[in-house]
Each structure stands twice: as structure tokens, then as C-alpha cells.
Amino acid sequence: MGLKFKISVLLFIPLSFFLFSDPIPTTPKIKKKKAEVKIKGGMVSPSLKIKNGRKVRVNKFIIKGNTVIKTEVLEKIVKKYEGKELTISQLKEIADLITQEYWKRGYITSFAYIPAQKITGGVIEIGIIEGKVGEIKVEGNKYYTTRFIKKYFESVKREKVLNNRTLERGLLLLSDLPKEDVRATLTKGKVEGTTDIILDAAELGFPYNLSIFANNYGSRYTGKVRAGISLDIGNITKHGDILSLSGVANPKSFDDMKYYKVGYTLPVNGYGTKVYVDYSYMDYEVGKELAILGIEGESEIFTVGVSHPLIRARDKNLSWSAELSKKDMTNYLFEKTYTTSNDDYATLQLALKGDRLRKNSHGYATLKATFGLKDLFGGMEDSEYTSSSRPGLANGDWVKINLDLTNLRKIGSCQLITRLGGQWASDNLLTGEQMVLGGPDSVRSHPTGEFLGDYGYFASAELRTPFLPGNTFLNKYINWAFFVDHGTVYYNTPLPGEDKSHTITGIGAGFRVYVPCHYHLRFDVGYPVSGDDPSDGDEIHYWLQAVVNF
Image (tube, rainbow, N blue to C red; front, side):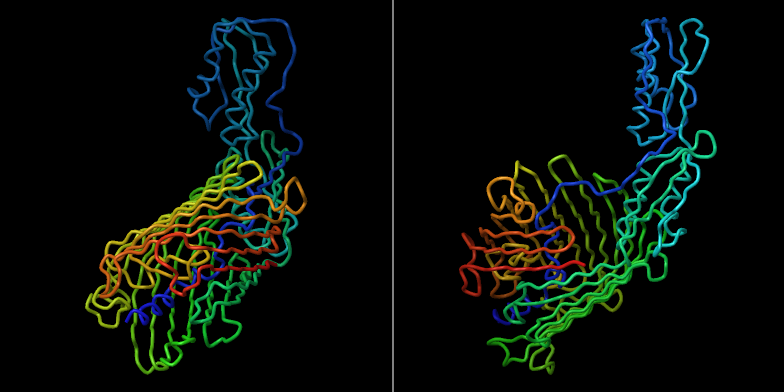
């Protein structure tokens, strides 16, 4: 039973685990996402100074013209200067402090000034000119329509007073589309006090993304070597939609393992909300010493979902998503003459995903809650359902929560990457929902999918160092990597003959080659240092992946 169960474990691992499995660039760079905004002519400097030795007694400041920042907030800025004798130059500097407050809040075309006035009783008026939004024009676009691009800046127009944060949000959302890079130039509007926005659609060619990869991340039973392709075709209907096609297979034998996925994403408004639908299919045949048993399997997953960015900025992002999936995973013996297990169920997943960029670090976080929907859409309900991959234990009624944290920190010329992930489950889980330990993006000292469990945790630290001493050209593209991985998984209720938990720890080294936007090469060697021994008997495991992007 142990061997048969082990094969089931290896083959029910979600296919996303085998795809582009390094979410961090091979040689990561801590830098901000571009959202270029230029100011051209007609703008007043917030640091304008006029030298004049004459002083006036200031008993009180009166602020006029502000609408987006409350008067009491601005009064606090100038309050400490009341009751003093100030020069005209100093008054200008105080007005600049208010301008800086506007700029800090993103109002980069608004400013404060000292208007011509008759000073009576020591009362000084500070005027505010809040830069209104004039016309929004689009230039240089070929593939994306003017109407579509302008849709992302409706909120800018609606706010009346121009805010750079809202403007940058629209620019960044557009930059998420294939081959799109919109830049903004602010110019003096035709109407006094307004600013026109010129959007330059610097399109980088036909809107598509293409990636080809090869690695040895597979199971020994279905072929370690695998190759794949991923293609995104954008703006098919002129509404910014994306058709995604991908496939993975064993290049030596397509019968051993093949996986296909097709997806479609459609923006529904200018705020970044998207709806999407995915369909994936996989089938496999088990080889090696188990080929005589005719073990085969297949899986189908259909997903519909919606996502929305709550925050989209150069230094921080936060988005949520909700998706409904129907999953059907089946294992067979003797060339599909006997069904050994069939997991047919539906799930609802709610997720939050974010990242935060600081001067020398970049943090990523993902929180997911997944709910098994019992017998909804024809799913499993009875825990004694004999065809379950966890017979008598798991069905379609459970809840699991996943938390994944990654931090990239620059330390001199090196980079430290730390990862922490965990899963909690309310009950026994079907095999396809369990946490995975072992493989190129888990504990690298053990084979892919070495152990599964209902709940557990994973921790990793990786130090990337320059390839050669000194500031050489190659160090920009090649790094050494030294790592330690550790993880533990637990079963809520183990099957007969299973252990309650498994803990493994490994160390290793490798290198990364990263040519921005085009080539990624990753090589790791993992060695076990504690916990369960690798099931394949190998003391050292090698992992190699090459990716080419077009």
C-alpha cells in the first residue's frame, strides 16, 4: 500500500508547482516599477524665494482657496510662525511648507503663494491654487485604443484636483498589460489654473508575452525532464483582454505526462478590476518499475474568478481575488480498466496579495483561504466516499488557510532571500489540496513531492553573492546562491501505515543567471542534513531550469 500511495501523492500535486516555479527573478533587483510623469512648462516652483529685508509683524495667517486639504491641517503647519516678525522671503518659505504638504499628498500641480495684499492688524493671507485637471490626450497608441487608455484615468478627471497618486495608479495598471508602457506629461492647460495630461503610449510592439522553458523538476515516474511554453496574446477585442495558452510535457514521451491550460482575462473597468476564466487538463502514465501496473491518471480544473487592486503604486501594492473552481482528478490501474481514486469537488478561494518596496528590501505576502464546497456542483460530501484519494477520511467539506511571506534584502553587494510559508486545515484534505514538501521550490535536498500533509510549514534562507570579486560586468547577470531549507508536514488523521508527520532539512548551493527581460538560468544542488532520508536513495539532488522570454 505504501508504494501505491506514494505514486498517488506524486501525481496529485497541483500542476502550478511544476510551472514557472521561481517567483523571484534569478538575480533580483530592488527597484521601483516605472510610472513616468513629466512636468513641462507652466508649473510654479514650490521653492520660489524673494530676498527682501523688510519685516512685518504676523499675528495670524488666513488660508484661502483650499478644498482637498482641511484648513485646520494647514493652519497647524503655519501656527508656530504666528507672533513673529518675518521678511517677505520668509513668508514665501512658509507658503512653500503648505505646497510641500500638497505635494506629499500627491497634488503636484497645486501650490501656495503670498498674494498682493494690504496688511492690516498683522493678518497675512496665504492663497492656494489647486491644479485642476484640464484635457486628457493620448498619443502614439497603435494597438490599444484611445478610449481604452483614457478609461484608466477617469478617476483622475473625476477628482477635479490633479493627484499624482491617482495618475500613477492608472499608468501602472496599464503597464501590467503586454507590451504597454504609457508615460504622462503635464502641461499648462488652456483654461487658467488647469493642467492638461498628455499620455504617450510607448507601445513595445504587438501585445504578447512568450516564454519557453525546460527543467528537470518532474517525478521520476513520469519523467524528470519537462519542457513548456506560455503565450499571452493581448487586446484581442480592443478591450485590453488577454488570451493565455500554456503547455508542459515530457519531451521524451508525451504519453508520460502532458498538461494544457487556456485562460481568458477581461478588464471590466478603469480601476483595475478583472474577471477571468481558466481551464486546465493533465494526463499521465507511470513508468519505471511500476509500468507493469498500467497506472494512469488525469485531471481537469475549471476556474472563474475576479480580482481587483486595492493599492497600485510604485512602492506598494495590494490586491484581492475570489475564484470558484471545479476539480476532477482520477487515478487508474491497468490502463484505465480499474479506478483507484476519483476526487470530484468544488472550491471557493479568497486571497489577498501584496508587496512593499523599501530602500534596501522588497517584501511579498500572500494570504489565501480555500473552502471545500461539499456536494455543490456535484462534489463529494460523504466522508466514507470510497473513491476518495484519502478513502474514509477526506471529502469536499473542509477549510484551509495558506500564508506565504518572502523578503528580499540587499546586504552590501549580496542579497538575502528569506521565505516562510504555512498551511492550516480544519480537517483531512484531499491529496490535491495538501501541502507539498520536497522539490526545487521547497526543500531542495529531496525529490519533488517527497511528502504531503494536511498542514505544516516551510522556511528557507538563500544568500546570493557576486559571481566574481570586485565590480565586474558579469556580476550584474550571474550570482552564486547558498541556501538552507526546512519543512514539516502533518496529517490530521493518517491512513494505516502512514506516519503522523515528516520533517526534512537540507542545505545546498547553486548559481543564477539573469539577463533582464530575456534569459533566466537556475541551477541548485541540494543535500539532506536531517530528518527523513530521500525516498529515491539519492544523497544529492540537482535542479536545473532555463527560461527564455520574448
